[in-house]
Length: 193
Image 1 (tube, rainbow, N blue to C red):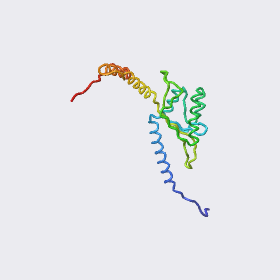
Image 2 (image 1 turned 45 degrees about the horizontal axis):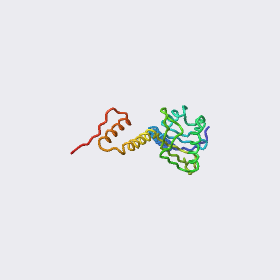
Image 3 (image 1 turned 180 degrees about the vertical axis):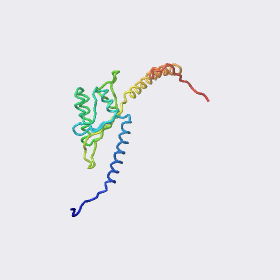
Image 4 (image 1 turned 135 degrees about the horizontal axis):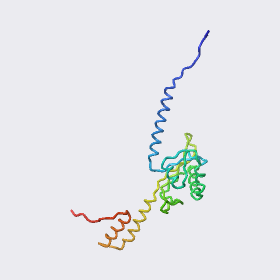
């Protein structure tokens, strides 16, 4: 025999809908971040990876011959490269102190397959929680090695051609451009009205 039933009905539809929308927004953000050509890495105070994108994963694997993922300690993975490890520690520690660091030309201690020193545009910022407490650091970087190489070569072209005028200037400039961009034929001329 049932003498009574007590209960509370709670409508969780709104909560489920809010969670669904938040998950959708997060998937869009993740998709955008993965499609960027920027390397993006976020670590906590212990240098444990909280987030990274595909570009960062690929760059790390290329430089250190190791896979990196969420939950890995970035400094431990870099242990065979003490100079790079120390520089990375220093950059993130500045973020942990609340500092934002932007470097237009960060010269890495590593080289690419051609023996060229790697250069990056680099930004390191603190990551804060909802209460404005710093919980880690985020680093975004873009490889600018080729850009720096081309700029250096263009400066050399200008220095080399500085004392030339007329036809010798244009012949030398044409040859330098062909060499710079590895092309066989270059024509530089004037258009007349």
